[in-house]
Length: 467
Image 1 (cartoon, one colour):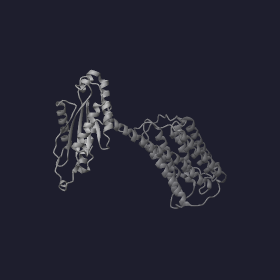
Image 2 (spheres, one colour):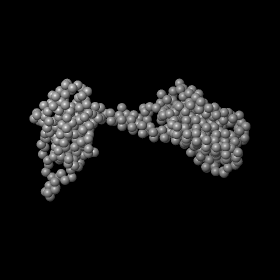
Image 3 (cartoon, one colour):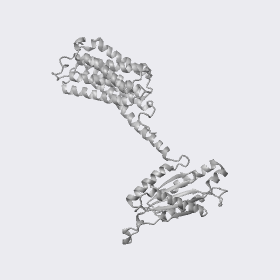
Image 4 (tube, one colour):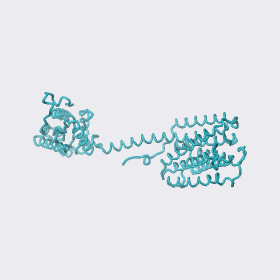
């Protein structure tokens, strides 16, 4: 099993630092709105291209936010799909406003400002309506559309107000210049305030998403307030500031999304690393298991062939292990295995070396770039150290736990399937050690290749890591 962003459970509860940060940002937004509000109807610099760029950038940010939210949507937690729907609907409205802005004399929307005002109205009422509906259910809505179904529904729903506010705008009443007096603008403000209250009261910041969604609703409400105060006219101080507040609400959710994705990737990596350890580590001994050992042996053999260096393998088996388990019980036998494994970890220290539990009472040591003499020396050190543990074993002729060892070293020159050859050689050597009285190390003699550099009197072992 492998974890992914979709299968990793849990949307974390907001930390205290996040709540403090959200409160600071909300306070700054309120403070900025208080400063701009008295001068909101003042004329600002007229930059039509900047106006188009601002709306395009805002629509793009909303679209990216919607895509990221939909990527987290799943049937068990429809909240991401609802938030994605709100931002996707808003992006559609904002992108529809762009061709209505000057200078676009060839656009069917550029004849008057009634179309962009209506699109702005649909945008803010629709966004507040979607978020408010989700919040009213306490985040437990029974409407569970798939992400694709939700996207189709939103695009289809957004098409109606876009067409109504553009090609059929004559069917709609004209919005007066002083938009703060228009009932629809006040309705948009009321919708956003109620939606914020629903998010704050019903969702209660049960997750970090609810926290940042509440902040987005604060920014959206201030956007409406400043737009109304600026007369809903472009190029006023209030209008420019409103675009900034709209962007702040979107960026609040977007940054939370990006931070959460980074955290999810770290959690996925940690979870997969834990799963990988479970797959490759023997539960009893904590050493590599047989499967991981076979993979390591294959990799080290390929490396030995590339670098033309020897590879040594040691097979260690506890003498009379089954008899030990019968006499002392399985718990003591398991404890013996753990003690041997601990000793092997302490003795096998090079980064390239590896120790594995090969069978119930058998261990394998892989010693890359180690010649026959070095492997035998290391094996003897381990065998003597195990005797030094003085673990009682009444059924062993030595009255203590001992091991028998088989050692094999193979040079890669001219050898194809070296893994099997090396393994069989070490097992044969182990068998001879057991037949010869146990508690000893026996090596399998394997010829070393003649090398050209020996003609110069240079030993091939000069570059080896010899124990």
